[in-house]
Image (cartoon, rainbow, N blue to C red; front, side, top):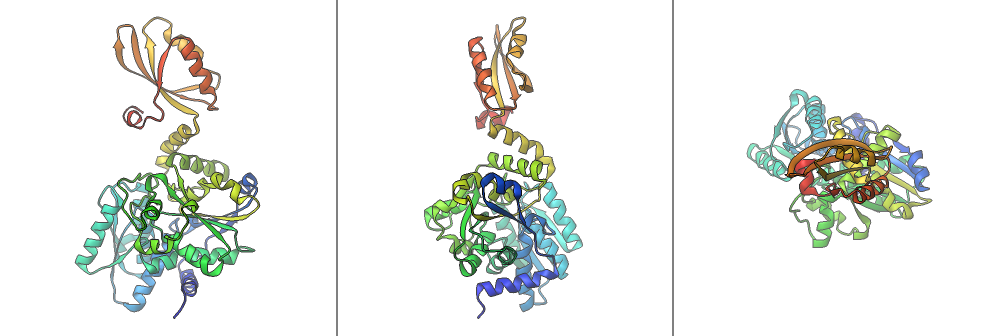
Length: 415
């Protein structure tokens, strides 16, 4: 019987009929910053702009090798797996029904339609992926289709492992560390399995979004469990429950090797990679780069590979990403200011602003008293330290204010 590594190499050879190997690129910017030899495995450059094309191809290839007459395939996806399945349905000449959450970015829905053409039907169901998944599985059972899991399938895991096959082949030497994103666990379990067999000296680190830390929860519980709530911002990795098959591989990962990335901090990484490197990454695709500051002491002088897992970024989300990044970095704040209702009060406030302070929002909320009015004000500046000077001036001038930048409840309604 063939080993996992042998099967992964066969899968990698087979998928060359569909798309070329993705680039493994040394990143000078990140390497200089961290004093390390940092490489990016550019899965954002596959035909569907994510690694998901690999698992979908391998699973469909193996099903059709056993059952050439299988005509219908079904999947559930937040976007990237959907595109991979759509692409491969057209490649193999088979029909697909693709279930996607209603909250899926429009860019991913449109690209799925483009890749699948007449071969696929898209159904938008559920606000969260796990609802979508249940609907897709029920439909698949009802019509006798083959369900293509986005991650919890041995053939999918094997297909995602081809990332590691290419990586080890292309590097001059085995990397000291590989940083892997975690959503459902497909690529992380596949790459880990291959590295354990072919490069056991290579260390691994795993990154999941703070709003979907299902591996952390599963490790603590000793088994996959469903999170009570999931933040869907990192849609490519916003999974409430890690897969059974993937957890079987990942359950031995030391908790200290699992890092959690805050969604707002990921926004700063997306903008940096776009502005400095011209690399477009979706939130899930930026996970591994985002944790490099946390790993700085561990990677100095070492060869490190970060898997940039996807680049399906809807640029309509850019204002939100910029907003969240500015708030995380401390260069944008929102205040509710109690403004005296007297001539010159507004001018007094404006004179307190520094040369790099800019008003991004100004709105009277209500008149809370005869002599005072409440104002919602948003201020952008060049350096977070500038706010110290501003708030000091406000206090000295007798202005009452409340910083609501990080008040999630208030921010949701008034910002």
